[in-house]
Length: 386
Image (cartoon, rainbow, N blue to C red; front, side, top):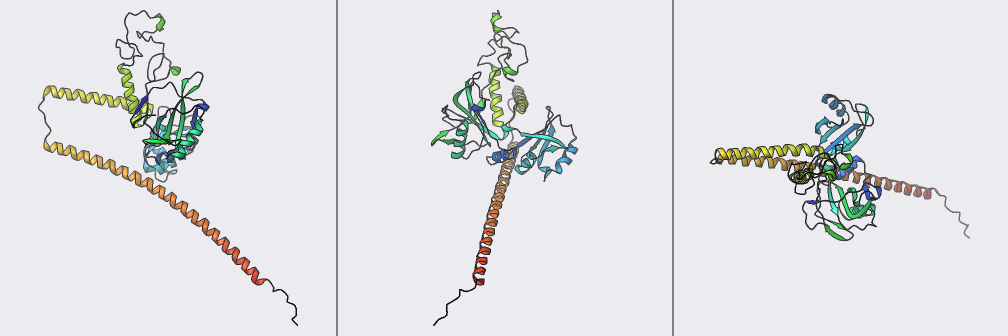
């Protein structure tokens, strides 16, 4: 277990997909969204795909008209679009709307299957030294009973993937974006950290974009970067296929590997899917390079430029307005969640009161009925007194 609440970046062998070494929640999608929202998740990207075949490419107006009859307030949707995988993406930051969207069973009369981007509504942490004889069901039951968390998934790391041999390390995924500093497990308090993947490199072409099992490229030599096996390599020099540097493609100090580490950290902190993270990471990287280049050029041309007092005041005021806006959005989101919780609580109380009232009414009617029977009962005959 980690000794500090910091970002955790650990390279493990692999995690399990076998049922024995994998636990996954069976909660319905709308219940998953509720659990995540109760633990600070506030952005929901929900995908729809046809149950069979493909969804037709509809105009936004057609989609809006179709969704208007299914949702109470269609304006609370932030964005809709069709992805390259022919799926419909609907985004919202409102819990009630997200629940309504997750309950949609058909788009334009076409039966659909619904899913949500789990990276945006979950957090992951690593548990060490979990006894091998402990089942993942038992582990998750203990974690949920002793902590205010709801578990989406638990996976054992494997020391030998081909033989499915588990280790004592378990990767736990919980609903929500607010990871606690510690958890209670079997009466012990253990500190945890946000888990960030280590770069996982294809052993065939040495790319970081896919696993070896899904590689469709030709085999590349680890030493010289040419298309032949490493056993037949006769090159006197090393040439990395990734960065063209004088080292092997698997060198831990390769700049491309370091870039992949930054990407995985960027993906985790921003809670993005791999596709969105790749795109935004490249955009941010280009923007940073542009800013650095511009700054260097400005310094080369004129090193005596200063910000005036008025400009500085304007910058600070703009930053204060942005911070205020973010703060108000957070307050409104929490207020909405609190109101929804109170509404459910009041509804529960009213149901209990109705049940109690009905029970009292039944008791009263029964009592009156019994009293009426006693009044109508004829008196016992008495013997004549002498």
